[in-house]
Image 1: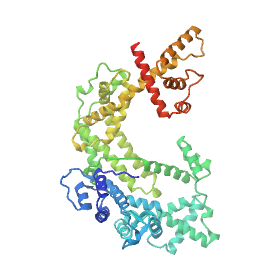
Image 2: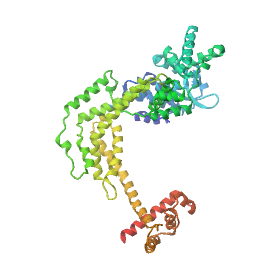
Image 3: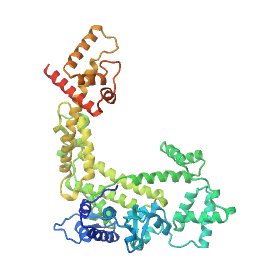
Length: 547
């Protein structure tokens, strides 16, 4: 299930779940009315949203501004979740309720198109339908209002007018040429003609199939090759990942290059669609000249920031491979703010461009734009990370303990630092070093005890294993001494502890067994066997420490 992106709306949804039913219905209606007015390119104060939904003015005011994209997403989620608590029957309402299949049939679109419209602000509620099942539905008035306000956005996905005879002839002519001369499959034919004529691919498919049924002797689709199967698609993608050229893949698959190109393009679209990108919004991002302003801010800070001598001061006791981290200068406050502004702006651009993307009409340049935003965001993030890697070393050195290596701590701290970059908000007025230091200290407080426990257990286990008689060329007296020493160690344990260690480490048999197998032999769970093993090692540690 989707999660809220805005804490204010998540908390409001929790409060609404406990309000009286009549008031809850009024608030859902108000939220749906608000959703129709939200502009995804603008930002909104939290108090405005609360007032529009509940009618109450919050006592406290926040300077935070919420991105329209996130507000649109969370309002749709709030409406659907809260409506699920009302048990409203469709036959009890004064206006019709359309199920998803009703909308697809009425407007000649696919269910995927409906899902895209929902992401663009089409409100959906959960109703009890006459068959007794609870499903997603749309109020007819809300659907019509959405269409009236988003005609340009959904024009390609809908078919409000019937296909005329001249238009049908043009569709058939183009389809026959693509099938015979270009070797395009039915799916590619529909996609290309839809993009050219401004119709939905579903409309094109329906028109051609109807023509084929009415005139089987002149049918178009029988002349087209079969669409690429899932097995063939995976084979093409594996070859492309190995670096094979499109022309070679087309030759091997006996397909036109356009079909191979489309398979590769669709895979990139799916991969980009799965990419998560959470950004910290800023009112600047919603200005028309935002890109130029952000670049000017970054360029200005780069010109005005000079490295100081103390920025390159290297601790003497560091190994050479860590001293290189100190050759990257620290970020001045203004430069740090500029980089975080740029980092979140590129993620904002990626989210906005992906939202505008129509997968069925996407071209290579559309994907290059999206991937360009991701690369720019990643490059900016790396610049921030490089300037703060010395911070990880500094905090890690303060958490060094016997039995834990510095490189273990640095590796763990680098992961924490990456997460800190993603979550840092420049609008709160703190330096990133302060925020990251707290995150690192919290992370080390959790991970250092785990490292100590793991590193204490491993040497003892290794010692026990090393003490087991082997099959090598060792003297009989040595093997006898090993056995006697292991026997002395095991004699200090309970019978159950001896059984667990002997079975798990193969002390009394040719081979060791897993904890699951030990549990089966002793009639214990794997968790209980692990507890017994830890207790046994604790006794052995205490024994060896006093010897």
